[in-house]
Length: 71
Image 1 (cartoon, helix red, strand yellow):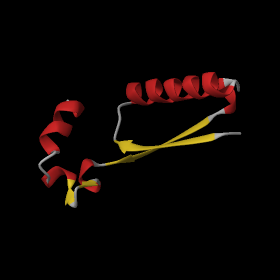
Image 2 (tube, one colour):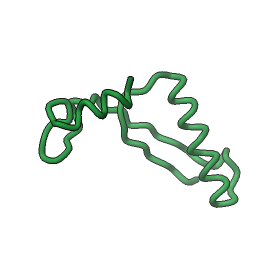
Image 3 (spheres, rainbow, N blue to C red):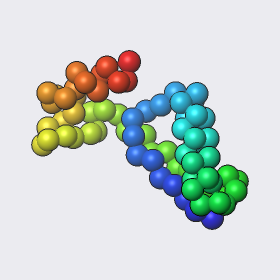
């Protein structure tokens, strides 16, 4: 059974449903395997646990861009 891991920010339940369905559907289309054969694991992290360019994300110059995407 194929397993797909996603590391990313904390998500709402609706976002989780959409992401799991979309990932499973894309993997199924790409491989020809049924969607039911895929297991998707979401590893959620707070933005303060991310780093970019050597800085903690929430303290970096990129944070304003990430906040826009998140909101």
